[in-house]
Image 1 (cartoon, rainbow, N blue to C red):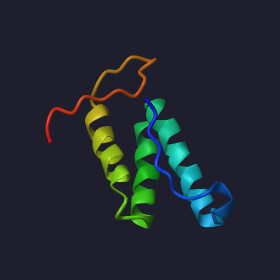
Image 2 (cartoon, helix red, strand yellow):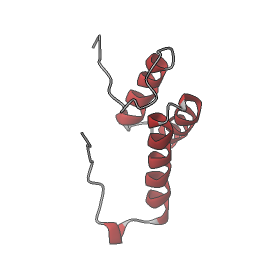
Image 3 (spheres, rainbow, N blue to C red):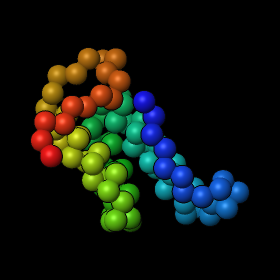
Length: 84
């Protein structure tokens, strides 16, 4: 299931926003490819530039948990939270 956050109308996006969204998509690509180091690095850089964006913290936490698990090659990104 995909989840979207409306940010602005596409024609109103400035260059900085366009770069951030592109970096976010790179991080997601790494995440789904189980490239934990690549995904974590990009999410941490994004979090540094936008510290109030909770989504980056969520992914960084998930990566810390998933990094130690043996996942199938075709893993689709599912994650079961076991605590709040």
